[in-house]
Length: 70
Image (cartoon, rainbow, N blue to C red; front, side, top):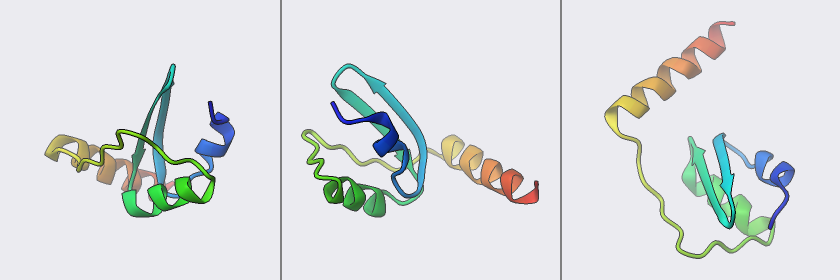
């Protein structure tokens, strides 16, 4: 299993959850994050890339705006 610290350093990462052999990553730029995985020598199997739903997108945008205002 890859070290969580290396995964936490992925660009545009917003969320990381590891459960056994399954890793769930949320990112604001999936292309850049997947490219960085390959750069680490990580070649995921059964990779699924999905867009956010409307509610998730709203939460992500408002959280980003809130973080900028601090």
